Amino acid sequence: MINLENLTIQRGSRTIFSDFNSVIETGLVTIIKGENGSGKSTLLRALAGFTPLENGKIKLNKKSILLSTAEWSQKLIFIDTKNGLSTDLTIIENLKFWVGIKGWSTSEENLKKALKSVNIDKYANLFISQCSEGLKKRAALARLYYSFINKIDFWILDEPTNELDQPSRILFQQLISSFLKQKGTVIIASHDLNILEKKFNIIDLTLLNKRNIK
Image 1 (cartoon, rainbow, N blue to C red):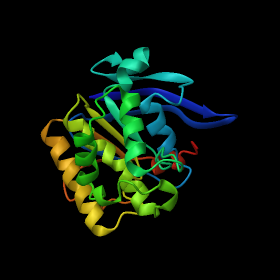
Image 2 (image 1 turned 135 degrees about the horizontal axis):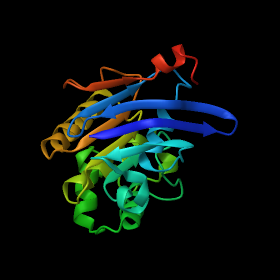
Image 3 (image 1 turned 60 degrees about the horizontal axis):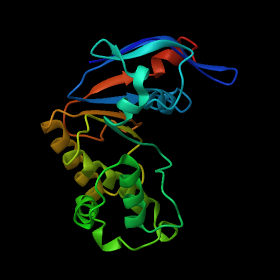
Image 4 (image 1 turned 180 degrees about the vertical axis):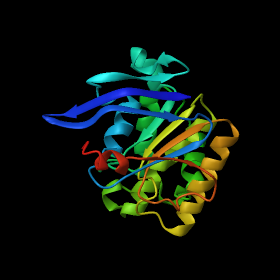
């Protein structure tokens, strides 16, 4: 279980959260919903260790995850809306670069399997600058395959189904189902509550807006 305890997060002079408390159950899918500007992306970045807290703690099994951000980062895959892709590299080069940063094996076999998991293996040598937005999204989501050959416990994903067509959404749902079977935890920020057919939990940040916490 991940406990969010009295979180206060600021961006410049703006307070995004103040004394925010919630719980994220492990081994399940949690969707964080809310209006634009409600803090969905900020909360995900805080969970991933990229956005500092002004106050409060994020605990996994009663231990603060931010005491060792390097150790925590090795337990998760984080994909934001920018996808983290270089336009100067091909799809497979981008994936290989990311896998190398993680310190994992960059074998050609696994790279091809990762691309195949989201049905883009035939586009492996296409430069990102030549890709549609949907293809870019799938190129980023191909990283999730590495959860099944490395010790990854958490996915933190920001609007992962944006730009995906229906066949690609089905592939994404299949990846989630496989990850849940190995007791993984999925945390998604999304407007789309039809993202999954399976049961999921919801954290609704709109409720914070009603309390005038931006």
